[in-house]
Length: 61
Image: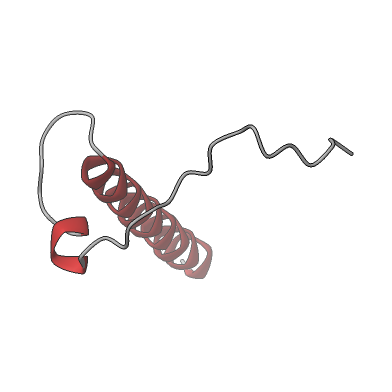
């Protein structure tokens, strides 16, 4: 374990407003990364659901 060292500055994080966090901002920003993750999960979910439905109907025929 690392020794407890008081020489390192402690970073204080301020809470972020939910409206600011969900804003649609372009570029490499935390908001863009959040939306990227949301859209990736949406695409993955739609793709998996489509694959499941197609395979269910192909096996039934």
